[in-house]
Length: 458
Image (cartoon, rainbow, N blue to C red; front, side, top):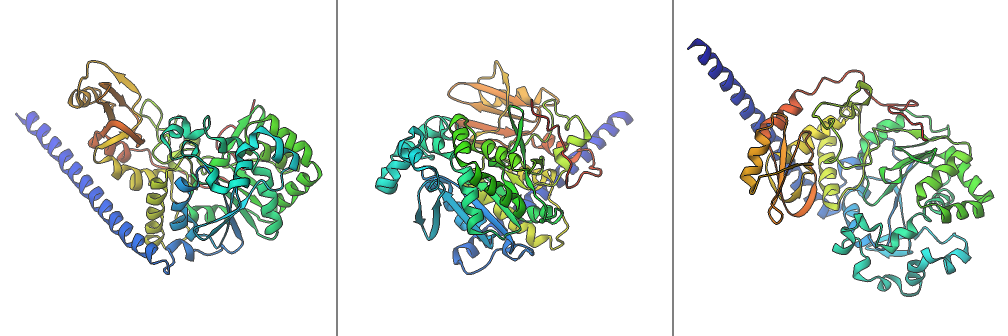
């Protein structure tokens, strides 16, 4: 009897802890929702500066956003009401020079060799835009259309993607000649999100008088370059070196662009050939959005080496962000800035998980795929699917698609993304325990001049 009584007491303690944790998450989410309403009201007023605007040491930083006419309507408007309100100086480049709702958008391609612009097959859309403006676009070419979204953001179907690789080097060249005296040049895409206070912290640790070219390292062959979608940064000396190299080797660089498919690789090679090495700043710069970051290994444990625990490192950027994700994370960021006046505080990937991702896992989501990846058989409904997950001690989430009767489960928690017809759920107690029992972080901090993963490209 004493043993049974002890077991009941232990179960009671766990239940109380779970209730307290759920109450804390509800309270945090309520505060976040209140902050969201408050900040959105201020954004609509237009005259009130968001908290990010008042951060110090931003007058010598230029942010450059690269987009395209086929995605402009879908991806750009959210930046007008969120991220661009943080930057003292910014430029926007596309494949058409136009004024879009009060924002001047520059033609990134106007300096490409005229023979290429007038005759190359990749420039078919560009020539149509030159002749007819945005009226040249049809619905199937727009990035928000179902036909495009079914093909991984349009890389197969969207003619704007064929133009994109040609933008990088001319965009960098035009930027530097317009603004030759900035300390830092920060390049992002329309589906990139920068945590502005974290970027400022990171840049404060670097010497702007030295040549820096920094981002999330990626490989093409044996060449290491900064991945464009994750965002990358160049210092003034680096920009000067690469634009001088471009002026002396423009035809060769354009020929290489024709042969290759990745514009960020072309640009990275130009930096390297100009004597500026690539600095791999992963995991600060990320190629995924918060709901897809691998906070743990596939067996549910945290990353296999202490030096690779993304959970513990400060975060700067995310990629593949939908407009809704950008809006929500920007509002979260403004709330965080207001609540953390100490400019030395850092937001880690673990913080983002606990304070931004985890509250979204406390209720199930319809028309949502949480990226559960283990197929479960003999589950014909959502309740069966949940039972399959509950029967596995390490399972933390599941999804069920009614049309196909497909049930999937997963060990390491992921938030996921929108998908029609799929219902996703999480086992709240297990996800909370996952966050609570994370191994304490040690000396992980900003990585300056030292990569946190292997950067050898083969």
